[in-house]
Image 1 (cartoon, helix red, strand yellow):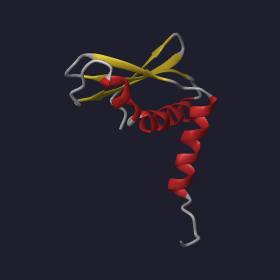
Image 2 (tube, rainbow, N blue to C red):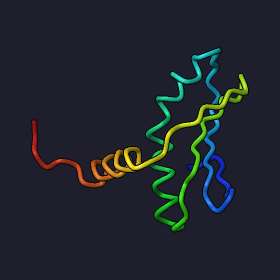
Image 3 (cartoon, one colour):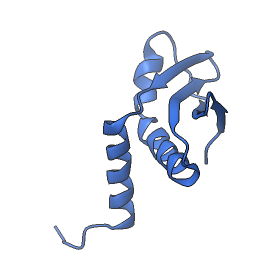
Image 4 (cartoon, rainbow, N blue to C red):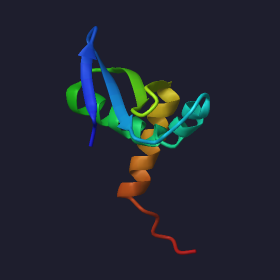
Length: 94
């Protein structure tokens, strides 16, 4: 579930609030874990609303740190691949 999204200048800004306790540059590393989640949110918003996403933010509430995550063609492709694997799991067995 998307925590917070708003339209700014005709495009979506998506904010995901986290309660992790991070200090200093630890926020950048901690935010990496949440990127796939934000990418799926962004893809869904774009597909459902025909409006682009311009910014993805992970906001760490305890420290007040925010980390901007990239969103472009590579990230969009990654989100599409994640969803494809989730909705069409491989039928081959290991």
